[in-house]
Image 1 (cartoon, rainbow, N blue to C red):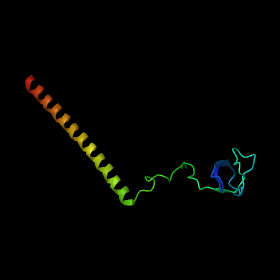
Image 2: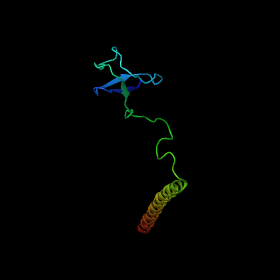
Image 3: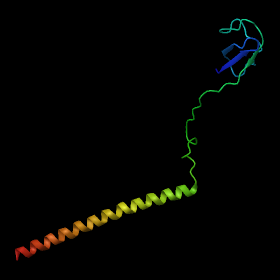
Image 4: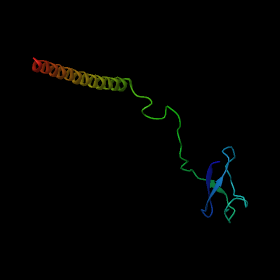
Length: 112
């Protein structure tokens, strides 16, 4: 149940009440209300700041709905990074193969 604040029109005392949303706005406070006003004048419901809202699930974050241009740029970056990592691995494998061939040739030359 939400909390509503009521202010006495005569003395200015503010009282917080827990009320269902469907209940009508109070015109006067009851003696059974917590900390009721003593002057028994009319009251005005104040506009509250509200409560914190928690958004759960997808669709609430700015990253959920990216533009098409952003998605294309991100894909191009990831593809470029993948090619770069693939290319460096192939070069290192080629260098290893070349060095092992040179070692084999040098060993073969020493045996003669």
